[in-house]
Length: 184
Picture (cartoon, helix red, strand yellow):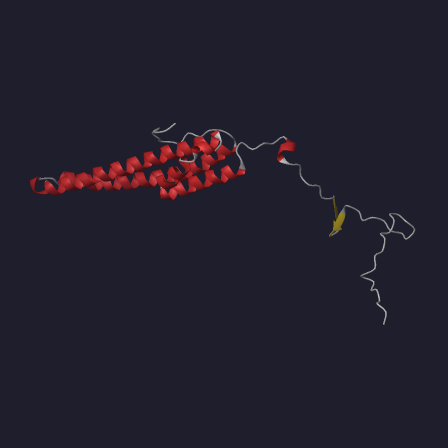
């Protein structure tokens, strides 16, 4: 039996456009649900459109990661990203340095408050027999104030993270609130 060539194996030349067979190329527009839509045209690249982001996209994700992790874990992620500050753009560097200063200020206020509150508890327990009830009341008020300050710094961290990211994406520096400048 001779080898038979199947239609899928045969090669046919494409029909000529608007040729004798009545072939016309498909329209770039398409219709769906009674509406005609224009053809798809790819969007121009950022550089061709005149838009250039202030920071590279990978640095934007680094800024987001740094700020979000610092909200919950404080100075540790801020330190990790701060140590990379020489490898990034100036805007990203400013955000990393500002966040490190903010987290160190937050740590300093927390540790100082805990030490002060603990000293008030010790002073209150030593002097309770000699009328030291004022020290006990003061230490309780210190613990309440310390809790309020911690909550306030947590909320400020969230707000600062959002604002710092937005400003960095716009190419503007951001000054973190209630911050002692340890580094510049």
